Image 1 (cartoon, rainbow, N blue to C red):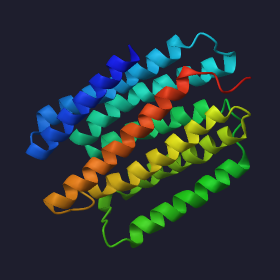
Image 2 (cartoon, rainbow, N blue to C red):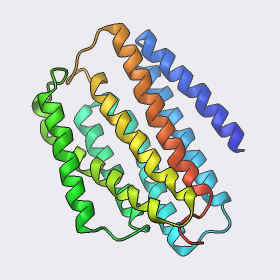
Image 3 (spheres, rainbow, N blue to C red):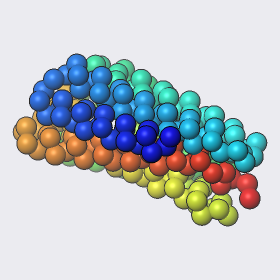
Length: 226
């Protein structure tokens, strides 16, 4: 079953990229939504196929499934209305942060590092000659705080005895990279030539779905309690 889901995800992803290249927005959004759905199906398959779940891992899994499911809505929304998409992705990051609470309670150190990372990212955006955030500065600033929070909180998984837990911070760092690249693909922020836009957009979505796959795969085995 998992092989069939992965094959379906690859086929729909290729269709999604072809429609983007051809400039067909409606088929593109539909194919993108289907691709995202396949990754959610995979997450549910991994979670429910895992028969040896602790209570803590079950709580983690349910929260992750909520976040991954909501990400499908965000994937579609950001193509239709950027601020709406950013807002929904913010809630997705909030679900991830709450899920990562199962590793270790949120600490002042987490908060301090989140603030520092957010300031660094936003300063880079403001000083960069590539971006013009304009009216999107506030939603991006708020979203950046939650994105950084999820990335910082995910690092607590490194302290868990089971090395498999490290897939979570690895996925979050890849997701962080995809969101950085995403800024180059948003016409309201950065206007790239066609060829450059194609390369950057493909890179953004390869990184994004790689991270989604890793988060989904993390549900296949309990790494919280030995």
